[in-house]
Amino acid sequence: MLSDLYIRLREFMARKVQKDEEGQGMVEYALILVLIAIVVIVILQVVGKQVNNVFSNISNGLAQ
Image (cartoon, rainbow, N blue to C red; front, side, top):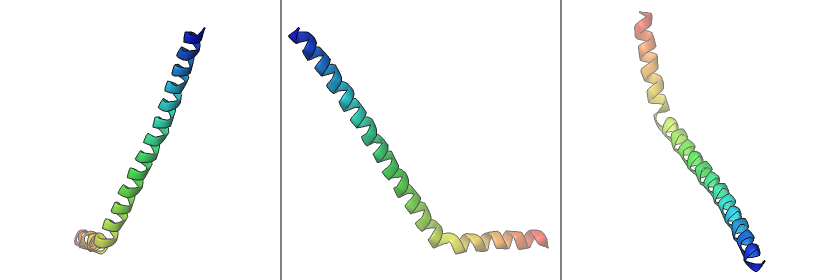
C-alpha cells in the first residue's frame, strides 16, 4: 500500500516537473523571438534609407 502511494506520488511529481519545463521552454523561445525581432527592427532603421536608395536606383534604371 505504501509503495503504491509512493509510486503514484513519484509519477505525479514527474508529470508536474515535465509540464513546468515545457512552459519554461516556451517562454525562452518567446524571449529569443522578441530579441531577434528587436535586432531586425534596429538593423532596418539603420540601413533602411540605403536599401530604399538601391531599390529606387534599380526602379529608375528599369524605367529608362
